[in-house]
Length: 233
Image (tube, rainbow, N blue to C red; front, top):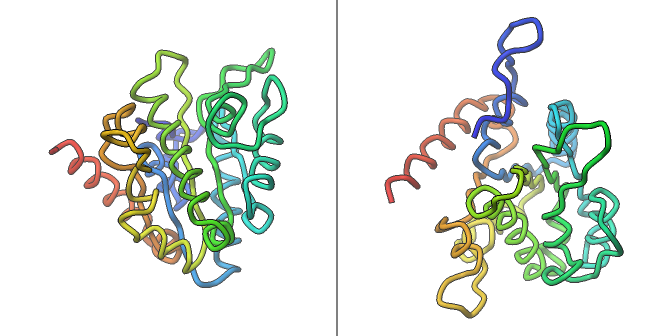
């Protein structure tokens, strides 16, 4: 699903690593990792700034060092996504995290929101403190995104997540049982979000920040191949 215009206002093609990775985010969530905190910070700032400049787009930052449990995570999100009332400190259920992420705020005089990007800085903190909670939240973000695209008749709001972290994030992203590689089992015959979306797994790509900066086209190629492989099944 193309969300980035191919040319600038002057007619020149949009280029650069930010534009290439935004094309990757057309169909995938992204895990970007580095062992260097400065490289992570520079990458996060550059990508978030570019995304914020897209039309009808909302960028929601989550600062991992201040989101170490459900209370502090909800505290950050409720200050970015308006709701009808207080946000309850739970993932599912009325007024919970999933409910808030489904909401599409309407601002008088402005067009409807089309794109929402969660940019999660240093999710390693929550993974270390409470990996089960991180899994539930990552599952919810990917699930809400898939629900909007595959199972909802409401006005389409494309939601994507960019996780930017270090070794702990990488290890979690490589875990086949983690919620960046598989839907969370809920005791039913198959996971809820798999039933809703028809997708066998969350569409998440992982790459080192150095490669994302130097050769974003290869990540875009990986994304294309992943999409083709998913269609083959």
